Length: 571
Image (cartoon, rainbow, N blue to C red):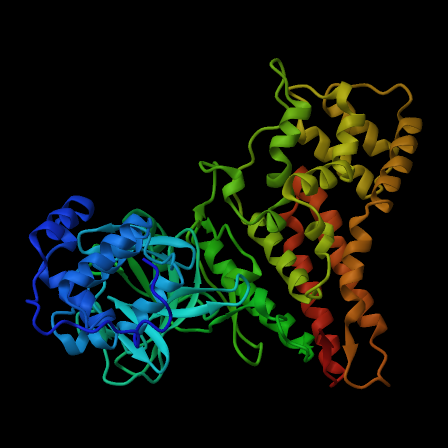
Protein backbone atom coordinates (compact mmCIF):
# COMPACT_ATOMS: atom_id res chain seq x y z
CA UNK A 1 0.00 0.00 0.00
CA UNK A 2 1.40 3.36 -0.96
CA UNK A 3 0.24 6.34 1.06
CA UNK A 4 1.23 9.92 0.24
CA UNK A 5 3.64 11.52 2.73
CA UNK A 6 0.96 14.03 3.69
CA UNK A 7 -1.67 11.35 4.28
CA UNK A 8 -2.04 12.43 7.88
CA UNK A 9 -3.64 15.68 6.75
CA UNK A 10 -5.50 14.33 3.72
CA UNK A 11 -9.04 13.53 4.95
CA UNK A 12 -12.23 12.47 3.22
CA UNK A 13 -15.45 13.81 4.76
CA UNK A 14 -17.41 11.14 6.59
CA UNK A 15 -21.12 10.93 5.88
CA UNK A 16 -22.58 11.47 9.34
CA UNK A 17 -25.86 9.79 8.33
CA UNK A 18 -24.08 6.68 7.14
CA UNK A 19 -23.85 3.83 9.60
CA UNK A 20 -20.29 2.97 10.56
CA UNK A 21 -20.56 -0.43 8.97
CA UNK A 22 -19.15 -2.15 5.92
CA UNK A 23 -21.78 -3.24 3.40
CA UNK A 24 -22.29 -6.96 3.02
CA UNK A 25 -21.38 -6.78 -0.69
CA UNK A 26 -18.09 -5.01 -0.04
CA UNK A 27 -17.37 -7.17 2.99
CA UNK A 28 -17.79 -10.30 0.89
CA UNK A 29 -15.46 -8.89 -1.75
CA UNK A 30 -13.08 -7.78 0.99
CA UNK A 31 -12.92 -11.22 2.61
CA UNK A 32 -12.50 -13.00 -0.71
CA UNK A 33 -9.63 -10.78 -1.76
CA UNK A 34 -7.84 -10.12 1.53
CA UNK A 35 -8.87 -12.88 3.90
CA UNK A 36 -10.50 -12.53 7.30
CA UNK A 37 -7.56 -10.93 9.10
CA UNK A 38 -8.16 -7.56 7.41
CA UNK A 39 -11.94 -7.60 7.44
CA UNK A 40 -12.42 -7.39 11.19
CA UNK A 41 -13.86 -4.21 12.65
CA UNK A 42 -10.82 -3.96 14.94
CA UNK A 43 -8.31 -3.83 12.08
CA UNK A 44 -10.45 -1.47 10.02
CA UNK A 45 -10.84 0.90 12.97
CA UNK A 46 -7.11 0.91 13.64
CA UNK A 47 -6.48 1.54 9.95
CA UNK A 48 -8.96 4.41 9.97
CA UNK A 49 -7.63 5.93 13.19
CA UNK A 50 -4.12 5.91 11.81
CA UNK A 51 -4.66 7.13 8.25
CA UNK A 52 -8.21 8.29 7.42
CA UNK A 53 -9.85 9.35 10.65
CA UNK A 54 -12.73 11.16 8.87
CA UNK A 55 -13.67 8.23 6.61
CA UNK A 56 -16.21 5.52 7.16
CA UNK A 57 -15.14 1.92 7.59
CA UNK A 58 -16.68 1.30 4.17
CA UNK A 59 -14.29 3.77 2.57
CA UNK A 60 -11.35 2.37 4.53
CA UNK A 61 -12.20 -1.13 3.30
CA UNK A 62 -12.27 0.24 -0.24
CA UNK A 63 -8.82 1.82 0.26
CA UNK A 64 -7.43 -1.56 1.25
CA UNK A 65 -9.12 -3.34 -1.68
CA UNK A 66 -7.73 -0.75 -4.10
CA UNK A 67 -4.26 -1.26 -2.65
CA UNK A 68 -4.56 -5.02 -3.05
CA UNK A 69 -5.58 -4.62 -6.68
CA UNK A 70 -2.47 -2.46 -7.15
CA UNK A 71 -0.26 -5.22 -5.75
CA UNK A 72 0.45 -3.32 -2.50
CA UNK A 73 -1.03 -5.92 -0.13
CA UNK A 74 2.40 -6.86 1.27
CA UNK A 75 2.55 -3.50 3.05
CA UNK A 76 -0.88 -4.22 4.53
CA UNK A 77 0.41 -7.56 5.75
CA UNK A 78 3.25 -5.76 7.47
CA UNK A 79 0.84 -3.30 9.03
CA UNK A 80 -1.29 -6.13 10.38
CA UNK A 81 1.81 -7.82 11.78
CA UNK A 82 2.77 -4.67 13.66
CA UNK A 83 -0.77 -4.20 14.92
CA UNK A 84 -1.07 -7.79 16.15
CA UNK A 85 2.42 -8.01 17.62
CA UNK A 86 2.48 -4.63 19.32
CA UNK A 87 0.58 -3.50 22.38
CA UNK A 88 -1.85 -1.21 20.57
CA UNK A 89 -5.21 -1.90 22.17
CA UNK A 90 -5.67 1.72 23.26
CA UNK A 91 -6.06 4.54 20.80
CA UNK A 92 -3.54 6.82 22.53
CA UNK A 93 -0.88 4.13 22.08
CA UNK A 94 -1.63 3.96 18.39
CA UNK A 95 -1.72 7.62 17.47
CA UNK A 96 1.99 8.30 18.00
CA UNK A 97 2.75 5.38 15.65
CA UNK A 98 1.08 7.06 12.68
CA UNK A 99 4.28 8.68 11.33
CA UNK A 100 6.11 5.36 11.77
CA UNK A 101 3.69 3.51 9.55
CA UNK A 102 3.50 6.31 7.02
CA UNK A 103 7.28 6.15 6.65
CA UNK A 104 7.15 2.37 6.67
CA UNK A 105 4.72 2.19 3.78
CA UNK A 106 5.74 5.18 1.70
CA UNK A 107 9.39 4.14 1.78
CA UNK A 108 8.53 0.46 1.08
CA UNK A 109 10.51 -0.61 4.11
CA UNK A 110 12.38 -3.90 3.84
CA UNK A 111 12.47 -4.30 7.60
CA UNK A 112 9.54 -6.67 7.97
CA UNK A 113 10.01 -9.43 5.42
CA UNK A 114 7.72 -12.10 6.85
CA UNK A 115 5.39 -12.73 9.77
CA UNK A 116 4.50 -15.74 11.89
CA UNK A 117 1.75 -15.13 14.41
CA UNK A 118 3.28 -12.77 16.95
CA UNK A 119 6.81 -12.87 15.50
CA UNK A 120 8.37 -10.85 12.74
CA UNK A 121 11.64 -11.44 10.97
CA UNK A 122 13.95 -8.51 11.50
CA UNK A 123 17.33 -7.81 9.92
CA UNK A 124 19.79 -7.32 12.78
CA UNK A 125 23.11 -5.98 11.47
CA UNK A 126 22.83 -8.24 8.45
CA UNK A 127 21.84 -11.29 10.50
CA UNK A 128 18.30 -12.66 10.37
CA UNK A 129 16.90 -12.91 13.88
CA UNK A 130 13.33 -13.58 15.06
CA UNK A 131 12.04 -10.99 17.47
CA UNK A 132 8.66 -10.17 19.00
CA UNK A 133 7.58 -6.55 19.28
CA UNK A 134 6.98 -5.43 22.85
CA UNK A 135 6.60 -1.68 22.45
CA UNK A 136 7.22 1.41 20.39
CA UNK A 137 7.84 5.13 20.74
CA UNK A 138 8.82 8.34 18.98
CA UNK A 139 12.13 9.67 20.33
CA UNK A 140 12.22 13.14 18.88
CA UNK A 141 11.66 12.57 15.18
CA UNK A 142 13.09 9.03 15.25
CA UNK A 143 10.55 6.18 15.24
CA UNK A 144 11.63 3.38 17.55
CA UNK A 145 10.32 -0.13 18.14
CA UNK A 146 11.25 -2.35 21.08
CA UNK A 147 11.67 -6.11 20.85
CA UNK A 148 12.69 -7.46 24.21
CA UNK A 149 16.22 -6.15 24.74
CA UNK A 150 16.52 -4.76 21.21
CA UNK A 151 15.93 -1.18 20.23
CA UNK A 152 15.08 -0.69 16.54
CA UNK A 153 15.64 2.78 15.08
CA UNK A 154 14.47 3.97 11.69
CA UNK A 155 17.55 5.68 10.27
CA UNK A 156 18.75 6.95 6.92
CA UNK A 157 21.39 4.78 5.24
CA UNK A 158 23.47 7.39 3.40
CA UNK A 159 25.46 4.81 1.45
CA UNK A 160 22.38 3.34 -0.21
CA UNK A 161 20.19 6.43 0.19
CA UNK A 162 17.28 4.64 1.83
CA UNK A 163 15.53 4.43 5.17
CA UNK A 164 16.08 1.26 7.18
CA UNK A 165 15.93 -0.05 10.69
CA UNK A 166 19.09 -0.40 12.72
CA UNK A 167 19.13 -2.65 15.77
CA UNK A 168 20.90 -1.58 18.94
CA UNK A 169 20.24 -2.43 22.57
CA UNK A 170 17.69 -0.71 24.75
CA UNK A 171 19.28 2.24 26.48
CA UNK A 172 17.74 1.28 29.82
CA UNK A 173 18.93 -2.35 29.80
CA UNK A 174 21.12 -3.38 32.75
CA UNK A 175 22.74 -6.56 34.07
CA UNK A 176 21.75 -7.87 37.50
CA UNK A 177 23.89 -10.43 39.34
CA UNK A 178 22.15 -12.15 42.24
CA UNK A 179 23.86 -13.42 45.39
CA UNK A 180 24.00 -16.97 44.00
CA UNK A 181 25.66 -15.71 40.82
CA UNK A 182 22.54 -15.95 38.67
CA UNK A 183 22.50 -13.29 35.97
CA UNK A 184 19.47 -11.57 34.47
CA UNK A 185 18.67 -8.54 32.34
CA UNK A 186 16.56 -5.81 33.89
CA UNK A 187 15.44 -2.34 32.82
CA UNK A 188 16.50 0.73 34.76
CA UNK A 189 14.61 3.98 35.29
CA UNK A 190 17.14 6.06 33.38
CA UNK A 191 18.93 5.78 30.06
CA UNK A 192 22.34 7.05 31.13
CA UNK A 193 25.25 4.66 30.49
CA UNK A 194 23.40 2.68 27.79
CA UNK A 195 24.73 -0.67 26.52
CA UNK A 196 27.16 -0.53 23.60
CA UNK A 197 27.41 -3.00 20.75
CA UNK A 198 30.99 -4.28 20.48
CA UNK A 199 30.52 -6.39 17.37
CA UNK A 200 28.83 -9.35 15.74
CA UNK A 201 30.20 -12.55 14.27
CA UNK A 202 29.33 -16.13 13.41
CA UNK A 203 28.93 -16.82 17.15
CA UNK A 204 26.30 -14.13 17.76
CA UNK A 205 26.90 -10.67 19.24
CA UNK A 206 28.92 -9.00 21.99
CA UNK A 207 28.06 -5.88 23.94
CA UNK A 208 29.20 -3.83 26.92
CA UNK A 209 26.57 -3.35 29.62
CA UNK A 210 26.34 -1.60 32.98
CA UNK A 211 25.55 -3.82 35.96
CA UNK A 212 23.16 -2.83 38.72
CA UNK A 213 26.28 -2.83 40.92
CA UNK A 214 27.67 0.11 38.92
CA UNK A 215 30.38 -1.96 37.20
CA UNK A 216 30.73 -2.60 33.48
CA UNK A 217 30.54 -6.09 31.99
CA UNK A 218 30.86 -7.65 28.56
CA UNK A 219 28.19 -10.09 27.38
CA UNK A 220 28.90 -12.43 24.47
CA UNK A 221 25.84 -14.20 23.13
CA UNK A 222 25.85 -17.48 21.21
CA UNK A 223 23.48 -19.01 18.70
CA UNK A 224 23.68 -22.43 20.32
CA UNK A 225 24.34 -23.91 23.74
CA UNK A 226 27.25 -26.12 22.66
CA UNK A 227 29.39 -23.21 21.40
CA UNK A 228 28.83 -21.30 24.62
CA UNK A 229 29.77 -24.29 26.77
CA UNK A 230 32.89 -25.07 24.72
CA UNK A 231 34.20 -21.52 24.99
CA UNK A 232 33.44 -21.40 28.71
CA UNK A 233 35.29 -24.70 29.26
CA UNK A 234 38.54 -22.95 28.33
CA UNK A 235 37.72 -19.43 29.50
CA UNK A 236 36.90 -20.64 33.01
CA UNK A 237 40.34 -22.26 33.23
CA UNK A 238 42.21 -19.00 32.62
CA UNK A 239 39.89 -16.71 34.60
CA UNK A 240 41.93 -14.82 37.22
CA UNK A 241 45.11 -16.68 36.17
CA UNK A 242 46.68 -13.55 34.63
CA UNK A 243 45.70 -9.90 34.29
CA UNK A 244 46.21 -10.01 30.50
CA UNK A 245 43.67 -12.79 29.95
CA UNK A 246 39.92 -12.37 29.62
CA UNK A 247 38.22 -12.60 33.00
CA UNK A 248 35.10 -14.75 32.64
CA UNK A 249 32.39 -14.27 35.27
CA UNK A 250 29.55 -16.65 34.43
CA UNK A 251 28.09 -18.92 31.74
CA UNK A 252 24.30 -18.83 31.35
CA UNK A 253 22.41 -21.17 29.02
CA UNK A 254 18.81 -21.96 28.15
CA UNK A 255 17.50 -18.71 29.58
CA UNK A 256 14.16 -17.32 28.54
CA UNK A 257 14.18 -14.24 26.32
CA UNK A 258 16.41 -13.20 23.47
CA UNK A 259 19.81 -14.05 24.97
CA UNK A 260 19.47 -17.73 25.77
CA UNK A 261 23.16 -18.71 25.76
CA UNK A 262 25.74 -16.18 26.84
CA UNK A 263 28.99 -15.61 28.72
CA UNK A 264 29.47 -12.62 31.00
CA UNK A 265 33.01 -11.31 31.48
CA UNK A 266 34.54 -8.53 33.50
CA UNK A 267 34.94 -5.38 31.41
CA UNK A 268 38.67 -4.93 30.73
CA UNK A 269 38.59 -2.65 27.67
CA UNK A 270 36.39 -2.20 24.68
CA UNK A 271 38.56 -1.12 21.76
CA UNK A 272 40.31 -3.93 19.93
CA UNK A 273 43.88 -3.53 18.79
CA UNK A 274 42.96 -3.93 15.12
CA UNK A 275 41.07 -0.60 15.41
CA UNK A 276 43.98 1.18 17.07
CA UNK A 277 44.86 3.42 14.15
CA UNK A 278 41.39 3.87 12.65
CA UNK A 279 40.55 7.55 12.37
CA UNK A 280 43.61 8.36 14.45
CA UNK A 281 46.23 10.85 13.39
CA UNK A 282 48.03 11.11 16.70
CA UNK A 283 51.23 9.21 17.33
CA UNK A 284 51.22 6.09 19.51
CA UNK A 285 54.07 5.32 21.96
CA UNK A 286 56.14 2.39 20.71
CA UNK A 287 57.56 1.64 24.17
CA UNK A 288 54.05 1.29 25.62
CA UNK A 289 52.93 -1.16 22.96
CA UNK A 290 56.06 -3.32 23.20
CA UNK A 291 55.82 -3.37 27.00
CA UNK A 292 52.16 -4.39 26.80
CA UNK A 293 52.88 -7.22 24.36
CA UNK A 294 55.66 -8.52 26.59
CA UNK A 295 53.26 -8.47 29.54
CA UNK A 296 50.66 -10.32 27.49
CA UNK A 297 53.26 -12.95 26.58
CA UNK A 298 53.24 -13.99 30.24
CA UNK A 299 49.51 -14.61 29.98
CA UNK A 300 50.05 -16.71 26.87
CA UNK A 301 52.54 -18.81 28.85
CA UNK A 302 49.76 -19.46 31.38
CA UNK A 303 47.51 -20.74 28.61
CA UNK A 304 50.23 -23.10 27.42
CA UNK A 305 50.97 -24.32 30.93
CA UNK A 306 47.31 -25.39 31.08
CA UNK A 307 47.92 -27.52 27.99
CA UNK A 308 46.12 -25.75 25.17
CA UNK A 309 46.56 -23.10 22.50
CA UNK A 310 44.38 -20.04 22.14
CA UNK A 311 44.03 -20.76 18.43
CA UNK A 312 43.05 -17.28 17.24
CA UNK A 313 45.56 -14.70 18.48
CA UNK A 314 45.30 -11.54 16.39
CA UNK A 315 44.80 -7.80 17.02
CA UNK A 316 41.01 -8.19 16.63
CA UNK A 317 41.06 -10.46 19.71
CA UNK A 318 43.15 -8.12 21.85
CA UNK A 319 41.63 -5.15 23.68
CA UNK A 320 43.71 -2.31 25.05
CA UNK A 321 43.56 0.35 27.73
CA UNK A 322 43.62 4.09 26.84
CA UNK A 323 47.27 4.40 27.94
CA UNK A 324 48.30 1.35 25.84
CA UNK A 325 49.90 -0.17 28.95
CA UNK A 326 47.49 -3.07 29.21
CA UNK A 327 46.53 -5.59 26.52
CA UNK A 328 43.89 -8.24 27.20
CA UNK A 329 43.63 -11.43 25.13
CA UNK A 330 39.98 -12.36 24.56
CA UNK A 331 37.84 -14.84 22.59
CA UNK A 332 38.62 -18.41 23.59
CA UNK A 333 36.01 -19.80 21.21
CA UNK A 334 38.41 -22.13 19.37
CA UNK A 335 40.94 -22.81 22.14
CA UNK A 336 42.22 -26.36 21.58
CA UNK A 337 44.31 -28.82 23.62
CA UNK A 338 47.87 -29.63 22.55
CA UNK A 339 48.46 -32.77 20.52
CA UNK A 340 46.85 -34.39 17.53
CA UNK A 341 44.92 -31.91 15.43
CA UNK A 342 41.30 -33.01 15.48
CA UNK A 343 39.97 -29.85 13.81
CA UNK A 344 40.29 -28.53 10.27
CA UNK A 345 43.64 -26.62 10.11
CA UNK A 346 41.99 -23.76 8.24
CA UNK A 347 39.62 -23.22 11.17
CA UNK A 348 42.53 -22.20 13.43
CA UNK A 349 43.74 -18.61 13.23
CA UNK A 350 42.95 -16.05 10.57
CA UNK A 351 45.24 -16.94 7.67
CA UNK A 352 47.46 -13.86 8.05
CA UNK A 353 48.37 -15.12 11.53
CA UNK A 354 48.44 -18.86 10.86
CA UNK A 355 51.62 -20.80 11.61
CA UNK A 356 53.48 -21.25 8.25
CA UNK A 357 53.70 -25.04 8.56
CA UNK A 358 49.96 -25.19 9.28
CA UNK A 359 49.26 -22.70 6.48
CA UNK A 360 51.26 -24.69 3.88
CA UNK A 361 50.56 -28.22 5.11
CA UNK A 362 47.97 -29.23 2.49
CA UNK A 363 50.08 -27.68 -0.28
CA UNK A 364 53.17 -29.59 0.91
CA UNK A 365 51.24 -32.86 1.08
CA UNK A 366 50.15 -32.49 -2.54
CA UNK A 367 53.74 -31.78 -3.59
CA UNK A 368 55.71 -34.39 -1.68
CA UNK A 369 53.34 -37.23 -0.72
CA UNK A 370 52.19 -40.00 -3.03
CA UNK A 371 50.41 -43.33 -2.70
CA UNK A 372 53.68 -45.10 -1.85
CA UNK A 373 55.53 -42.55 0.28
CA UNK A 374 54.40 -40.10 2.97
CA UNK A 375 56.89 -37.35 3.65
CA UNK A 376 54.54 -34.76 5.16
CA UNK A 377 52.39 -35.83 8.10
CA UNK A 378 49.74 -33.63 9.76
CA UNK A 379 51.41 -31.46 12.36
CA UNK A 380 50.31 -31.64 15.97
CA UNK A 381 49.06 -28.55 17.79
CA UNK A 382 51.65 -26.94 20.05
CA UNK A 383 52.54 -23.63 21.68
CA UNK A 384 54.64 -22.36 18.77
CA UNK A 385 51.49 -21.75 16.73
CA UNK A 386 50.31 -19.15 19.25
CA UNK A 387 53.77 -17.58 19.41
CA UNK A 388 53.90 -17.10 15.65
CA UNK A 389 50.51 -15.33 15.76
CA UNK A 390 51.76 -13.27 18.72
CA UNK A 391 54.80 -11.92 16.85
CA UNK A 392 52.82 -11.28 13.66
CA UNK A 393 50.26 -9.38 15.77
CA UNK A 394 53.03 -7.04 16.96
CA UNK A 395 54.03 -6.35 13.38
CA UNK A 396 50.42 -5.84 12.33
CA UNK A 397 49.93 -3.33 15.15
CA UNK A 398 53.04 -1.35 14.15
CA UNK A 399 52.18 -1.24 10.45
CA UNK A 400 50.41 1.75 8.96
CA UNK A 401 46.67 1.51 8.52
CA UNK A 402 47.01 1.82 4.74
CA UNK A 403 50.13 -0.34 4.53
CA UNK A 404 49.98 -3.54 2.45
CA UNK A 405 50.86 -5.65 5.48
CA UNK A 406 53.53 -8.21 4.45
CA UNK A 407 52.05 -8.00 0.97
CA UNK A 408 48.98 -9.90 2.17
CA UNK A 409 46.39 -7.15 1.77
CA UNK A 410 46.90 -7.28 -1.99
CA UNK A 411 46.54 -11.09 -2.05
CA UNK A 412 43.79 -13.52 -1.24
CA UNK A 413 44.54 -16.55 0.91
CA UNK A 414 45.47 -18.88 -1.95
CA UNK A 415 47.76 -16.29 -3.55
CA UNK A 416 49.51 -15.69 -0.22
CA UNK A 417 49.96 -19.44 0.27
CA UNK A 418 51.62 -19.79 -3.14
CA UNK A 419 53.79 -16.72 -2.49
CA UNK A 420 55.02 -18.15 0.82
CA UNK A 421 55.46 -21.62 -0.67
CA UNK A 422 57.65 -20.63 -3.62
CA UNK A 423 59.76 -18.22 -1.55
CA UNK A 424 60.44 -20.68 1.26
CA UNK A 425 64.09 -21.85 1.50
CA UNK A 426 62.85 -25.04 3.19
CA UNK A 427 60.56 -25.88 0.27
CA UNK A 428 63.39 -25.17 -2.19
CA UNK A 429 65.73 -27.37 -0.15
CA UNK A 430 63.15 -30.18 -0.10
CA UNK A 431 62.80 -29.98 -3.88
CA UNK A 432 66.58 -30.28 -4.23
CA UNK A 433 66.62 -33.23 -1.80
CA UNK A 434 63.60 -34.88 -3.41
CA UNK A 435 65.43 -37.95 -4.77
CA UNK A 436 66.81 -38.64 -1.27
CA UNK A 437 63.41 -38.42 0.46
CA UNK A 438 61.71 -41.63 1.55
CA UNK A 439 59.37 -42.71 4.32
CA UNK A 440 62.44 -43.12 6.57
CA UNK A 441 64.16 -39.96 5.34
CA UNK A 442 61.35 -37.47 5.79
CA UNK A 443 61.14 -34.16 7.65
CA UNK A 444 63.56 -35.29 10.35
CA UNK A 445 66.18 -35.70 7.61
CA UNK A 446 65.30 -32.31 6.07
CA UNK A 447 65.55 -30.70 9.52
CA UNK A 448 69.10 -31.91 10.08
CA UNK A 449 70.30 -30.91 6.60
CA UNK A 450 68.67 -27.48 7.08
CA UNK A 451 70.33 -26.92 10.48
CA UNK A 452 73.79 -27.81 9.11
CA UNK A 453 73.37 -25.29 6.29
CA UNK A 454 71.77 -22.61 8.48
CA UNK A 455 74.44 -22.84 11.19
CA UNK A 456 77.27 -23.20 8.63
CA UNK A 457 78.51 -26.32 10.41
CA UNK A 458 80.70 -27.41 7.47
CA UNK A 459 81.00 -30.29 5.05
CA UNK A 460 81.95 -32.89 7.68
CA UNK A 461 78.65 -32.44 9.54
CA UNK A 462 76.81 -32.33 6.21
CA UNK A 463 78.28 -35.68 5.16
CA UNK A 464 77.59 -37.14 8.61
CA UNK A 465 73.87 -36.28 8.39
CA UNK A 466 73.54 -38.17 5.10
CA UNK A 467 75.53 -41.10 6.50
CA UNK A 468 73.25 -41.18 9.57
CA UNK A 469 70.31 -41.71 7.22
CA UNK A 470 72.04 -44.38 5.14
CA UNK A 471 73.44 -42.29 2.29
CA UNK A 472 77.14 -42.12 1.41
CA UNK A 473 78.26 -39.01 -0.45
CA UNK A 474 81.37 -39.66 -2.62
CA UNK A 475 81.77 -35.93 -3.27
CA UNK A 476 80.34 -34.62 -0.02
CA UNK A 477 82.51 -31.50 0.27
CA UNK A 478 81.63 -30.24 -3.21
CA UNK A 479 77.97 -31.03 -2.59
CA UNK A 480 78.05 -29.09 0.69
CA UNK A 481 79.61 -26.05 -1.06
CA UNK A 482 76.93 -26.19 -3.77
CA UNK A 483 74.07 -26.50 -1.26
CA UNK A 484 75.51 -23.82 1.01
CA UNK A 485 75.79 -21.23 -1.79
CA UNK A 486 72.32 -21.84 -3.17
CA UNK A 487 70.78 -22.04 0.32
CA UNK A 488 72.12 -18.58 1.23
CA UNK A 489 70.86 -17.26 -2.10
CA UNK A 490 67.34 -18.50 -1.32
CA UNK A 491 67.45 -16.81 2.07
CA UNK A 492 68.89 -13.53 0.78
CA UNK A 493 66.29 -13.25 -1.99
CA UNK A 494 63.29 -13.83 0.28
CA UNK A 495 60.97 -10.87 -0.52
CA UNK A 496 59.53 -11.04 2.99
CA UNK A 497 62.68 -9.34 4.31
CA UNK A 498 61.88 -6.07 2.57
CA UNK A 499 58.20 -6.32 3.50
CA UNK A 500 59.11 -6.60 7.18
CA UNK A 501 61.65 -3.77 7.08
CA UNK A 502 59.14 -1.42 5.42
CA UNK A 503 56.96 -1.63 8.54
CA UNK A 504 59.60 0.18 10.61
CA UNK A 505 60.09 3.17 8.29
CA UNK A 506 57.47 5.35 9.98
CA UNK A 507 58.86 5.22 13.53
CA UNK A 508 60.16 8.55 14.93
CA UNK A 509 61.44 9.98 18.19
CA UNK A 510 59.71 12.90 19.90
CA UNK A 511 63.11 14.60 20.11
CA UNK A 512 64.46 14.85 16.58
CA UNK A 513 67.98 15.46 17.89
CA UNK A 514 68.09 11.93 19.35
CA UNK A 515 69.35 9.30 16.93
CA UNK A 516 67.24 6.13 17.21
CA UNK A 517 68.52 4.54 14.00
CA UNK A 518 70.44 1.78 15.75
CA UNK A 519 67.51 0.89 18.00
CA UNK A 520 65.04 0.66 15.11
CA UNK A 521 67.58 -1.31 13.07
CA UNK A 522 67.85 -3.83 15.92
CA UNK A 523 64.07 -4.10 16.13
CA UNK A 524 63.79 -4.51 12.37
CA UNK A 525 66.52 -7.16 12.29
CA UNK A 526 64.81 -9.08 15.08
CA UNK A 527 61.52 -9.26 13.22
CA UNK A 528 63.20 -10.15 9.93
CA UNK A 529 64.70 -13.09 11.80
CA UNK A 530 61.38 -14.02 13.42
CA UNK A 531 59.35 -13.84 10.20
CA UNK A 532 61.85 -15.12 7.63
CA UNK A 533 63.89 -17.62 9.63
CA UNK A 534 60.93 -18.35 11.88
CA UNK A 535 58.83 -19.45 8.91
CA UNK A 536 61.58 -21.93 8.00
CA UNK A 537 61.91 -23.08 11.60
CA UNK A 538 58.17 -23.77 11.67
CA UNK A 539 58.55 -26.15 8.71
CA UNK A 540 61.45 -28.13 10.11
CA UNK A 541 60.16 -28.28 13.68
CA UNK A 542 62.60 -26.06 15.59
CA UNK A 543 60.46 -22.94 16.04
CA UNK A 544 59.83 -23.15 19.80
CA UNK A 545 63.54 -23.44 20.61
CA UNK A 546 63.92 -19.82 19.49
CA UNK A 547 60.86 -18.22 21.13
CA UNK A 548 62.46 -17.41 24.49
CA UNK A 549 65.48 -15.90 22.74
CA UNK A 550 63.25 -13.66 20.64
CA UNK A 551 61.25 -12.52 23.68
CA UNK A 552 64.48 -11.75 25.55
CA UNK A 553 65.83 -9.81 22.59
CA UNK A 554 62.61 -7.80 22.35
CA UNK A 555 62.82 -7.01 26.06
CA UNK A 556 66.47 -5.97 25.71
CA UNK A 557 65.72 -3.63 22.80
CA UNK A 558 62.85 -2.10 24.79
CA UNK A 559 65.12 -1.48 27.78
CA UNK A 560 67.61 0.34 25.55
CA UNK A 561 64.81 2.49 24.12
CA UNK A 562 63.63 3.33 27.64
CA UNK A 563 67.17 4.34 28.62
CA UNK A 564 66.93 7.19 26.09
CA UNK A 565 64.24 8.73 28.31
CA UNK A 566 62.51 9.90 25.16
CA UNK A 567 59.28 8.63 23.70
CA UNK A 568 59.38 6.89 20.33
CA UNK A 569 56.22 6.92 18.25
CA UNK A 570 54.66 5.01 15.38
CA UNK A 571 51.64 6.16 13.40
